[in-house]
Length: 251
Image (cartoon, rainbow, N blue to C red; front, side, top):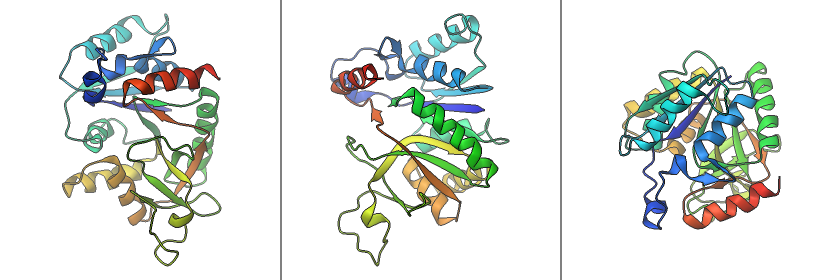
C-alpha cells in the first residue's frame, strides 16, 4: 500500500501562539507528528510513503533526510519527499499525485489524529472497497471540533452523496441525506487512480482546497463510501496539542 502525507502548510496559527516547531515536528504523545504517521503507515504494510513539505523552513526536510538515511527506530523507511510551497492543500495533493497514479493509496494531512487500531481497520476496509469496485473510501467522524468542518452526506449504506460547508437550512428536497448527516470529513482519503483524473481537471479549472476536489468526485459520479472513526482531531491551535495528548492516552 502506498501512503501520502500533506505536510506543506505554514502552521501560522501554532506559530502565533508560541509553538516554535513547524507543525510536522510538533511532538504529540512522545513523537513528532510526521514520525507518528510514518510509524503507523509502516505498521500497515507501507510499500511507499510520499511526503510534501514547504520550503519555508529546512527543519522538516532535514528531519526527513535523516529518516531516509537512518530509518525510524532503526527500521528502513521507503520514504520519498518533495519540497514545495503550494497555494492550497489541493495543490499539495496534485504534486504528490504525480507519484501515486498507478495504484490505490491513502492520503492524509500531517495534523490528523486518530486511534491506531481504528486506522488499521480502515486500511482493511479500503482494501476490500477497492476489490468491490469503489473509487474511494473517505475517513469521517461524528465528533465535531473543527473550526470549518466539511459535512459529509451519506445514505443508509454509507455511500457518500455530497460534501457541504454547512447543513443548516438544507431541506429534504435539496438533499435528504445532507440534512440528516452527522458526519464530517476526517482528512483521511483512500483513493484509486481514477480520482487523480478528477484532481487534474480541478487543477485545470483553477480550483483549490481539498473540499472542492471531494465535491468534484461526487459531481463526476465517482463511487465513494464513508468509514466512520470514533474521533478525529486536527492540530490547528496550541490547545489542540493537549486535546490530542489526552485523546491518545485513552488508547
